[in-house]
Image 1: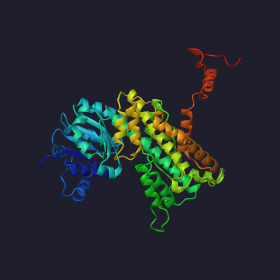
Image 2: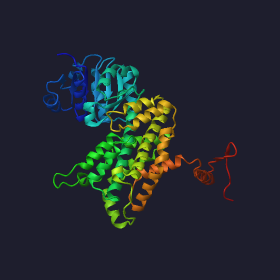
Image 3: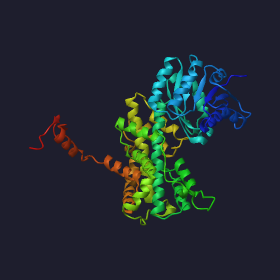
Image 4: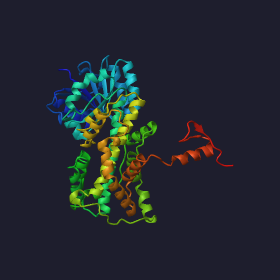
Length: 472
């Protein structure tokens, strides 16, 4: 039998869809799953009459691949990935390439690149975004590792990736774990935007008393604008329109208000803290999920803690997209992107990744979860100024801040008066107000630190470090 172009380990939904994507684009494959029954079911189902072979064990799997062998692993991050690497390595030869398409922690990928390259194997850590549909029809892919390893799979990935007007949504990200780092930050931005839209929904529902269809229509309006047209707004509209088949009520209202987090949002925030990046909007989205998990405590607290009651606020006509609320969502969304790009900028220097910011914006324009029309503006901003220190300092984004800050302020104030939590919107307001303030009160913090710990301080009018005996 003819040897296959590439192999897949792990027949979960993402793995199945990626191998079908590759086959549709002219690349034959061999697949392996830890349980062979899963492999058989796939070959007799979705993989029937396609250029896809199965293998019962990893030795057979490797033997069916043309050289140099290219193996995509779609398994659980962490120990499961290490186990597959250890099990398959004895059957690999010099020049063979392993690709980890899962959501790995980027320092794990750094380690694996070094270990595998020392054995003369190639290793690529590749973030994949787009969900099940994107994997099948064309995802955004973020591969990192050695350039020679990327070159060996560039043709395959270019065909599999989503296609936009300026090319495929894949590019060589950089060395080591850079691909997985960029995917981690992508997910942090995703956390932010999801929470922002959830807060807008909560305000429309509890303050404006709107139905699912009415809220969906507002989302539909937003999705036609340059500032908010995006996949996440599109699917939010769709979710709000779906009815419960049992009673035709809005299905979203029957869903438990507890959201999990798989780790990438946490990794984004930890990396930001380590790099000294300010990411309050993204952090607030992570904390929103943590708070949501405290369901029993919140149920009890509601019975004993008093607060303001929701009252009507005019956010503007729904037929016009509720302009005040839209302004707030626009700025919070911009802040989420800006904070993510700031993490990438700092990481590029700290880890010597030499990230190309316009290219990252370009590959996020199609296929991935955070695809939006804003990414063209982000791409243009970093093309115009590759050293741009913060996205909101670009002239177009600064104009959005100047135009929308009053709306964001009014919405956050109204939410506070109504006793409705808006962690991302309020964190964004603090972020923007801090960023546009030339003198913050940390001068007093420095005085206190010097008072209790002799930590010294700097002065505005003199060079050097100073200490004062503040208490006689």
